[in-house]
Length: 397
Ligand SMILES: NC(=O)c1ccc[n+]([C@@H]2O[C@H](COP(=O)([O-])OP(=O)(O)OC[C@H]3O[C@@H](n4cnc5c(N)ncnc54)[C@H](O)[C@@H]3O)[C@@H](O)[C@H]2O)c1
Image (cartoon, rainbow, N blue to C red; front, top):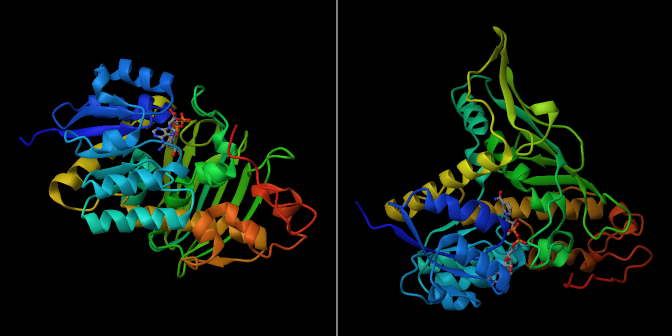
């Protein structure tokens, strides 16, 4: 048996304490949490008491954690605009990195993280945890087994997303700040983007989208309707805060797969209900374990994510969601915002010297967004409604 991986968790917010800590603690032979970092005193103390670490194992400065000799893995659980500097510092210190999604708020930041990890020859894995949901694994296996022939279209509806605030002691509204979050509901739930691509089975090459604010005056979108095109297939990914419907449909040349959730709701808030496979032979409902409520479902998927990451570190194989794949997912997401603002489809990869690659959604202010654009008209992402000048929101909340 090899020694447990020694994990330092950066950011003691909701996702870290509710899901990452329990996932590591569930496998003491594979992981031991040796350090925590968070500049928010009450979150750091909550993390310390939750993990039982001693005061000398917790740090207000993440760089002190990264410098520790007893940390093999840096687990980055801060909001996404902070991921780059932490991951680049961790790579420079020779630490493997597990990073929460989205990999960064801007593609250039994500690309810098990928480059730093590759240069340092450390593993960079990203928490694309919905890939481990049992019905997603079952659907992908059916596709791989040829059950529906060639995939033609995928529809991912997640229109009933719950708008959860961030940690109270930090900045509860950071998800509504385009500079911090890199977008609104679509960026927060880019799970739908990688699920769409995963089920298509081909890399997305072009994106068209419509986005809208949930409430007039919001700085980020609360609704995003996206069409992701690969070389000869397409996924429709529809994500919104509110009460809209959820569910996933995969249409193939010889059949279809439909995933349903309670009350036609949205994963992971509505538990999985059924997977039906329809072919010329008729419709069958697959025998899968009953769907779980949100907390146990995400907890199980986080355990699978950290186990996959540990295998990647110890065997040298790539994790299920390596940094480069997560960069691609982020580019597709940022391309959706660009498409919605410009009113035209956008190819990926994005030009590396362009403003949205460099700065993400706040870079839209440097593009020639038409006066008639609904994104400009609603003042999303700091775009001024009445002229080409900009009025970016402040970073504080
Ligand atoms: N994979 C998932 O299912 C999932 C679910 C929720 C959140 N997330 C992601 O996890 C990340 C964090 O989200 P959250 O909901 O936990 O946010 P949160 O607001 O609950 O917590 C953020 C924490 O980061 C800390 N922090 C801020 N700056 C820091 C720094 N420089 N060093 C260390 N810590 C710092 C804050 O003090 C706070 O405790 C985001 O990227 C989010 O998208 C992923």
